[in-house]
Length: 441
Ligand code: ADP
Image (cartoon, rainbow, N blue to C red):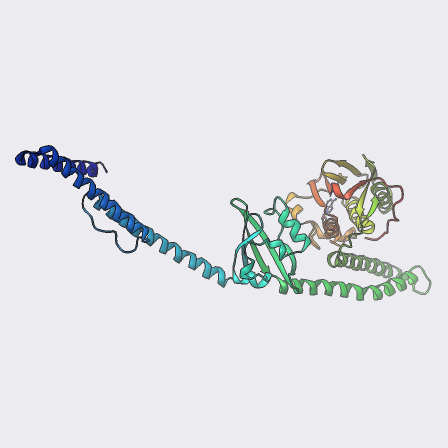
């Protein structure tokens, strides 16, 4: 840059000197100098004018040729322009590749700007969500009106939430899974998957288990009834009494298993009606404590501590199943004389019910899997104590239907604490009359 300025300055000096010398020989050096400088200025303005015209014409073709400093500016500009053109072509090619590959994806991809406004989507997303080119700029919740999706979109932290499953807009037979990832400033990417096949398979599995359990219930009741009649009666010879007792035990285990399977199927398939009733927590705790004492046969000390008197808004029989499963587990997995504490308290986060025992405890590696169906830490012990392996799966589903969560703290050989957390909006103050709690696990 300095070289160019020196070059141009030298040119200026040479022109001035040349004009002055010429002026001396012709007798009027000042006029010659003014004429020379004026010519120099005009040539600079002319170059600038050509440059402006070239810019105004959209820089088509190579930059005009020129001499001096303007020639160098033209060359630099032309080189820069060529470099930009090459980079633009590269960017275009890359964009085309991204569009081609996202266009070939079976998953739908929607880019949102300004919170939830449609900025771009691939053909799969257009098909699954029924979007037209003219919908660009509109809010996505105008097309996906499912209330679950609307509150999901409006929640602060979508990234930590599970993907949402809902029927496709305008086509109830299609099941979509939507996952929102926020990035940048008010921008988000929505991935839409068609999970109809998986959803139907899952539905078939649930229906199958529910139907089989239902079909088994009647024959089992008949078998258990006859076994009970035969036991202790003189219709069966004394040598048969032991096998009959064992058969009765197994029939009752199978009945418990079938009942748990049916309850789980109902929890999974039936929709929450939304007509929650206030369930008195203290009554519920006293009731499960009474049943646990009778199940324990006086071998455990079961205490109930309630810090506040509240109700949980929900389904009485479902809440009973969740509370009872935890308390019966504490009895099953605690040694004789073991202390079991049932606690209820309320804080700024909501209401909490915990069951603490001094039993066998659980190795931390098993804790994340406890709510899986038929997952048992010690299958032999679970079966001996009459466990079906479905109790905590039932607790999990009941909590899902009451917006609750479960936490587990446990140390092997020292004991466990299972805590159910209910959000503030599900906890109410005590009401005078509550519905009867329906028994059944
Ligand atoms: P189960 O009918 O076998 O008790 P659950 O689903 O209720 O099935 O519990 C799953 C497993 O979790 C149990 O088999 C047991 O190993 C473990 N578990 C549950 N509660 C406790 C507890 N209070 N103490 C120790 N282990 C427990």
